[in-house]
Length: 506
Image (cartoon, rainbow, N blue to C red; front, side, top):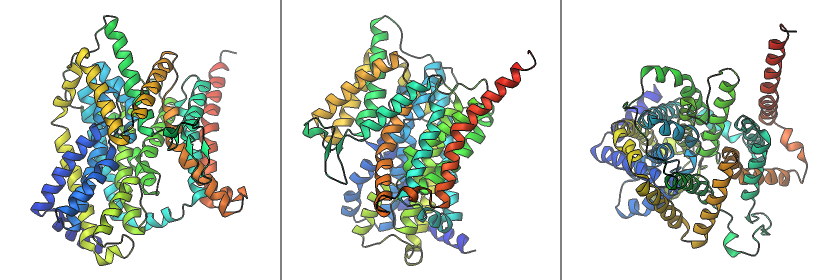
């Protein structure tokens, strides 16, 4: 009954005319933020914090606006990922792997509507999880220390084995390159410059946005330009359908549900984030289906590969509010900015917040549900508008996307060096695509590399260099077992299956 009464308080706050308007405006602005390459939710939210305070918005209204922008950005990032192979934000990188091939097959509108539905389901699962399991899940998240996070990263890299395709050597090489990129810059522990080659611009490392936009946007535009110069058509003929059908919904339902639950669990872990959730969910579904479904075509336009990262990243984004509200620990970079916004109002997030400010906490939870519905109603009718981008002539599309990409990167850093770096990475990425090098392992290496290193070193510092800490807890042991299982079990099953198929002929 307490939960129902608290939800009543929350929806009472959410359904005030001002908060409804703020949620709708935030959802729209968030979608735009997600569409623009390189901007990302953390920058969108950070820009709005001083505006909220200057306008004198009540704390619950300000938090509702920031949360709507955050969730909206996770929705919006999929649009350019699917249509143009340009990830709108980091968590949408995995969406490009199957979303863009679907768009090139004339299924852009279907992919957009199906991904919007997956995003809605993922967020809904996380909202339900917040309502039902917030205290319990918060205790679970609190059990994760540096050692547990390090082993979680190991598990993510082991799950990466499902992304390596037919040539695992190429995949492992690309993952190693991604890890190497993550080590560039000043060592946060010792202050030593690493792999900067006496270039001051590399002191802060190579920004993830620069890598992603270079590998995906620039490389793809170079391929489009090559086709244009060769006289090939780059525009796509639409299939005529603007929304997914019931068969496609049934085909992807369990993938959407599984990925939403997985994304929520990962989102609750402070610092893991939506990018990790989408990568783990995609690799899990690819591993699961490629071993059992001969018709699986992950990386070439499989709808399950589209919905998995979308459900996961939206669930993770919503789930990241749990550690912020219950522990006072930011679940992601964006929620860290929101915590800063609350401090402007002299509000300290933590366990006491549920008792001292129930209207703020439950108003936020209810508004997340409202914003989620608004985003679905906003995105599905606009599928036709978004899909029309594919009909733009190539001679306009290529320079337009390049211009947006350069503006997005420059807006973040204000550095010409980053533009040159992005161009160089794009050219290298173009040649990598030519020799069929997989991009997903490299991206995952860049995403997880720094997290992995930092938690490894923190774990060792706690025990004065004793590595036993990485096998000293039940969570660590469980993750080690799972890591070993995802590496060993699939090849063993394939080998057993091949042996079984050969034995009758012998």
